[in-house]
Length: 395
Image (cartoon, rainbow, N blue to C red; front, side):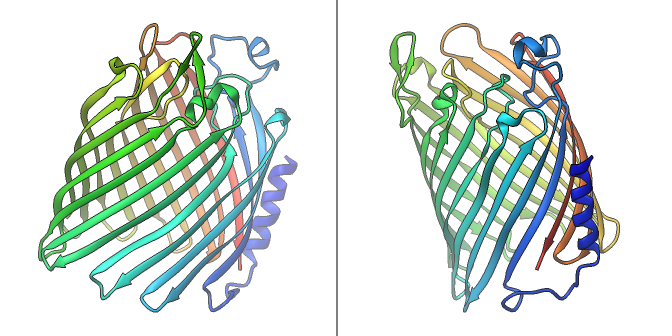
């Protein structure tokens, strides 16, 4: 109750905050926020298990509070733009205090443009936080540090042809020894060419090459185990405005992945990501996304994870200050095991939230959601209900 009072106190202060607060001609924002979250099943434990034997507690639920402090900067430099942001977070749990942590997320990017023909960005991100327990399902805190370096660009060769390229390098480090198999370094390079119509729609092709490397040695069945791989994909990309109300973005490609060890784990097949945005009125927006991609490895017994899913999100701007959001999702996670039987998880989720923005830099929001997973693997099912209340004020 005291946690909710803190958020409501900040919300009250936010409601009466001056709307004219601004720094450096409104190019820099400093903000603070407070979040309270109730989670009915923090460790995503199956209802078939006794929580006292699994996590040492009689209850699966807990309430956490997160304090946030940070800044956002958006500084134009002629046609270019410099963006920088950082959010420091401190989270405390009421019951499971071994999960308390201090983390954050930072981003630095330089957006460049030359005569409206060459555009792109170069930047980096850094994030530290607590990993989800979706596939740990034990009381094992796993604090994750992620770093990403990226560069991309597009060149309008002629009014009808557009060349693009991208480079991404990422690192991920896990604190839990059981999760070291996920300490994968990835390097990805992409290039493509598209035809641009007079209406600014695009359709073309792209080739993407990716290298994954496990930086730490893992031992499985008494031998060194390596999940390093090489992957190449080629396919079609499209960005199309079907009408003033509908927009379609699609990527369909054929992917081939080969592992450095155990070629029986190699995979080849189609991948896709298609999103459809529908805006029937100025106050309503619907976004539907269907995808099929390679998912993250969860443990050393898993060689490959294929994720196929669909999500639908809707936003209703009730007024200039109030909006309502909802979402539905369904996905199938297919796991191929190194040894033993392969298995499949099916995940369904739904959520509803409301946001109130009395001023440009003041936000109060609340939401509820439910996620339910069924699995062909024993004790991997779970159901979780989450409720959040958050207030944020900037100047």
